[in-house]
Structure formats: C-alpha cells, structure tokens
Length: 257
Image 1: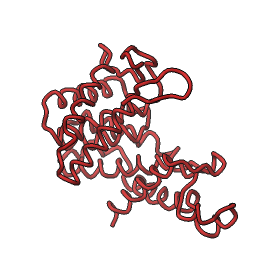
Image 2: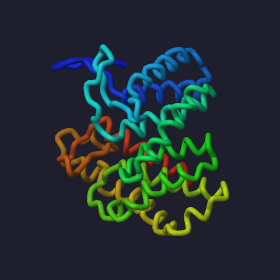
Image 3: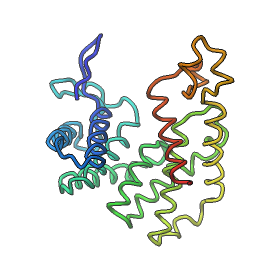
C-alpha cells in the first residue's frame, strides 16, 4: 500500500500494511469470501521488506523499498504484530506464524512493555490464541498496562486509546486465569484494574462525546451530536479519533454486557 503524498516523496508505511491486513482479514471473517486472499498474502510478503536483521521493523520505506524512516511511531510495531496474528488465524500459514513469533520474541527481549501501547496489548491477546501458555508474552502484556495505571487513572482528557488498552488488559487477565497461569497475577491489583477500566469508559463519555447540550454551542450542531472530540486538541474531531472512541466503547460494552 503506497501513500501518495501531495508534498515530498511517496512512501510505504508499516502501519498502513497492518491496517490493510486487518481490514481484509475482518472482511473474510465476516463474509466468508476469500476473494482477497491473494492480496492478503501479497501484503504479508511486503512486510518482509520492513524487517531488519536484528528483528526490528523499519517503519517507512520509499517506493523503491529503500528505508525512508527507521522509526516513525511505536504504534506500528504492535499494529503489524496484531495484524499478522490475525492473518495466521485465518490462513494457518507457517511463514506467517514464524513472523508473529519473531515479532513477539523481539518485543519480549527488548522490553516493549515499557511503551504502554494498546496495539501491543492487542497483539499479545491475539497471540495467546495461538500460543495459549506462553508466559513471556503474558508478562509483556501485564507490564504494558500495570506500569501505566497511575497515568491512566489521572489522565484529565478523554484519550481514547487508554480505554482500548484497558479493554485488552482486562481480557488478557481473564485469559491468564483460564489457562492456569494465575501466579503471574499475584503481584498485580486486579480490582483496581477493573475499577479504572470502568472509570475510563464513563470518563470518555463525559469528557469526549458531543452530547446535545454541548453540540448546541457549535456552528452546525447536527454535524456534531453523537460524535467525539479531543479536548486537549481544541475539540478536534478526526475520523481516526472517532474510530478509537468507538472501538474502545463498543469493546467495553460487548465485554461487560
């Protein structure tokens, strides 16, 4: 997937490859239509060109596949690992499985839990469907959220990716219990985790959604009602922000109720 830029050179982003894979996997899962399987595997084959010998991913390539940016944003690495795990579940392809494991092992070896990234939690949760008793992946996922709980509890803006992170963390602790690895949870406050999880869902609705009594102050209220915004960005409303809000709130609702 090449991003055509109005200024500067066109580029190929690791995150864009991940989103393409995730979208096509979800399409095939829902429709049972395998029409795009060839494109899925082409996208997977393209991911190979992003890998360094060390196991780290380059984040952005030029269209001739030379490296444009080794690093752009930490989200890309968890995102592609999550996408590859989904792809393996769909195809059972051994080469995909190998790359999923390489990616996660690299994250474990390089302490990626310090990044508190919701995509890493998504990747770990999906990986535990494939490697149900891999305790190193569980430890990675636990550190990814629990070392960040104070920040999550005190964050004064809606910050929707925090709810996404909490959703994944709660699901992960349930998986850890179901697989008999409860000892990994002994040092963590699971009650506090769930309290903050509920708090973040309610806080998003209270501070990040255009309720009618707020939308009425904007120039075209009908355009805003039911939407979401980032208060710390001057009520900015982007499709990406709305996606994160909806993803977090829908997953919270579905898992809670």
